[in-house]
Length: 166
Length: 450
Picture (cartoon, chains in turn purple, green):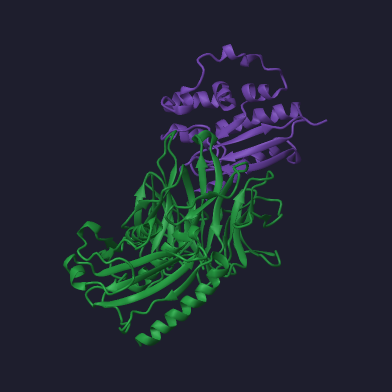
């Protein structure tokens, strides 16, 4: 349920939910009613939860595109600031594609999205050596249903923190 | 001509049988029709006609115990599934011939309008082996077209049935069959959000399925070696997704290239000595060729784009691939050294996963257009595009070794949906699902076994 928790508080997702209407998505049906009840607002500063909940661990892409949208850049700016404040986390950036593409192309498209995300964070001062990228293509969806709103959630790059070093 | 032909056929059978004896304990011998000259069949199918009317064929119950009837059943299913034959209901049979002794009452078979007739029998030898015999008869010509016998271990009975079906197919169409083949694929289990993917292998009719990997690692895009019992595939084992080789019989696994970046989308050259694949560098994927003996890589494409899904022409001289260098994915053809890269697809939409036919005459593809995914074929010069099937999601064609039939996978979508493997012939007819336990995707057809 980690994805679901992060979806609740991610400003990006809330915008999408209002704009496109997520009702009917399998994932959406599983969302708890009450975010506050989960204690998400009390994340310890500098923790994984803090990053996921208060910064946002993922950015979204248009179909067949690895261009960073304005919303994505804003999220990555916050990620870069947070990562600079807490420099001991190695980072893996996962690139993903939606299921409306062919398998091999989507592997490469996910890699392209992960690279675009990494390059942006690097430009914002996150050392390249802290970051590795991996693509899962369309093999790891987080939302399942047969409409555009769900596919859009799967076209993503997720910044994952590893156990801190030092 | 006939005698010579039959002698050559017999020699080929024996040569083939010698190989099979070592690997599969199979032995084939030609059965001559007593007292009659083998003759050119009057009955034959012309596969080059646009719309082939299925040939009515009577397949009698083979004489013997249950395995005899099972073998006849598999032969009948193979021929029926090819779309080229229409097996006649056994209830309509007048002549109750059983076994391979004697000559059928052809007039009885003409009454039920059988163009061809198959008789056979299966007996057990004293050493425990099965002896399977069959004869294919030309009903209107009143003569035997081909007759063979096979010796095999009892657990091999399905292979014998497929080999007999291939012999019938070849005798009546003039082209090699494809029934004695296998398919590697990705077996998928579990919900869409937690799906386990494993490499698996089955006979082309879905029988004898078994898993090749444990499911611990994500694995994708298996492809058969044209020359060995070996597949190449992509695995996420070890953190970086890379191309591997897997020996089917031993389960031995080997990393193809220790390059630091992701490698994916592998496919063998026709001689089995090289693998072409994509290597990812930042946002770009380019196509490389690797010599499996020297392990040296050669770069074949160099664009700031996604170049992937390479597929050799059967003569090894050219490679079809897809690239989004012009915007969306399109099919290109280049020489095997990377020169002369030429776009061949120009229709509406995106074209992906080009796969060159073993006959060389067509390239199959996945086409994405208007929110639908289609499987189609196009000539290597870009002309003659035809869509074979279209729907919510069809992807990843693979060719039968005779270039007459394709498999692909179709995803139904939805939270509880998933992919299944389908077969369709190149005329776009005779589409049917290949039975698998659970979901299945990424089929790759083997060459004819021998």
